[in-house]
Structure formats: C-alpha cells, structure tokens
Image (cartoon, rainbow, N blue to C red; front, side, top):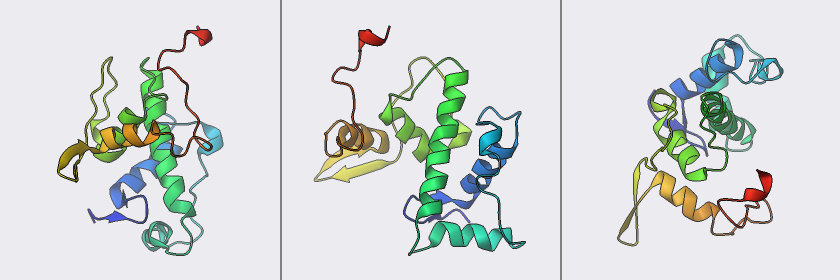
Length: 154
C-alpha cells in the first residue's frame, strides 16, 4: 500500500525500511545492536501485525515508535556523513515527509516537503515544523536554545 497509516502517517514500505535498518549493521541508517530487536514481531503474520501496530486507535505506541525511529535513523545517517541535523527540526521534518530514499546528507540542506495551505498562505511540511518548534508552544517538553548559534558549547 502507499497509504499513510496511523497518527504519524507511516507508510508500509517506510515501516519495512525502518525495521530492516534496525537489523542491518551495514546500513547507513543503522542505530546499533541495542536497537536491533526493538520492533521484533510476536506473530508469524508480520503483515497483519505491522498493519495493526500502525492503525490501532487505542494504542499509538507503535505509531510513535516507528516515527521516532525514522527520525533517529535519518539523523544517524547525517551525523555519520559529517552533517549533523539534530538541531534542525525543519530539515528532520522535511526528510520525514519526503522519505529515506531522498535523504542525501549535504552541507546546506533545504527546507521542503509537501505543500500546506494555511489561511491562504503556502507553507512546506518542514517550514511548519520549524514555525511550530520555535513557537514555544511545547517549550516545557521540548526546550530549545535561545540562539541558533550557541558558542558556549564550542
């Protein structure tokens, strides 16, 4: 299927890629041995179990887990390539939206993704993520630095 499933909009091929990347130590998205069994299946009917995980109305645990692993794997890829994006919510959101297959680490990544029209103004998926993240709406849960360039860590 090419339909997005559950509250985080994960597609079945993306879920399969996330699962594969957890096990494949040669993958540029590999997170380490401690993550390998995180999404192991409990039944022999993997397709149905995956579908149930991603579409459960009562329990969103797996929807959130797949989404978090997607972002973590993309972040690991960019970190390994020497282009850390862990402090770039707009780039992580863009890559989450457009997918693994187009994640190519580079020095100056561009914000993008699907277009969204809000009150007659056009935004991209990544730009909405940036605006929301830095709005302070969830600052108690996701605090951010006061300055994009904080030289105290250098």
